[in-house]
Image 1 (tube, rainbow, N blue to C red):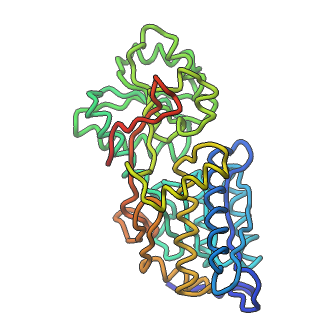
Image 2 (image 1 turned 90 degrees about the horizontal axis):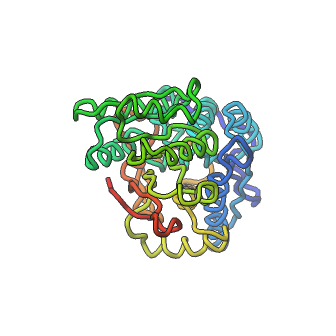
Image 3 (image 1 turned 180 degrees about the vertical axis):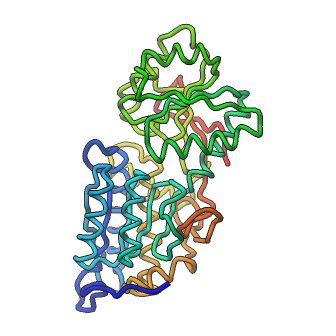
Length: 370
């Protein structure tokens, strides 16, 4: 693959800071709470890198851009950051937004280390420029499907909105469950009101309902409607995309927020590094950090190692992905080529299915690991 020429400023040698672009959703309709946690992890790691001498004596500097869950805005931000001379771009939570950012980074020859977006097809074609820390959607959602079958669910309804991400999730579930005797029933939330979902669940004899929809609308109204309808009192509500991870979920739903299994990417036990980082993140956020904060921290840890060992030239950073071997908060991070995945992928991030404990909604129960 040919290497596009680096624009002026791509590898500074004048003793100024090493600049890194950071893409995060910080305003609506972006998932603001997720963006805040990703950014907290990024900023904590940058501070620690600089406290330990920076990159060859030069401080690491984040240039933060708010994507607001807008793919076009993210692509424009990548263009701007490339012109400003950043050595690499990191971050992003929303898969569709990360896909737009990855496409621009690939076209410009700008390394992009994606922190938290899981869509398998992050780029249309294989690329050397993009690497990812979060597990691909196919792996995480297959673990979730294993959890559903293990819990005895074979008729599974998905309340879905139009989106590449939700459509991919539905396809993964259907392809994985069908050979195992499972049926996936699609409920089009572009046509149904939250109050009509219960009628569909009864008619379809579903035993589980998965929320493949935005937060807080319409996810929160759907949960409230199902919880209040005695006909579907025993149905499992699930949220593989992780909506219940964040404190806002519990605030909006109260008791109804509990016992809704979701995916998160943490090990059963954090390493000593993870425990230390968790304490620092809790202090920074004034609340318990969710898994995306750890993903943000690990992103900078990996990138700083690449910058120290390979320099700030963009092409050399991209060439470093297959040689990474960094201890992160959730295990040793190494990238490889995974079948069906177009970017350099950390092959084995930890995957859990967890929920909020009905007796103590601020406490999470691990239900299944993969």
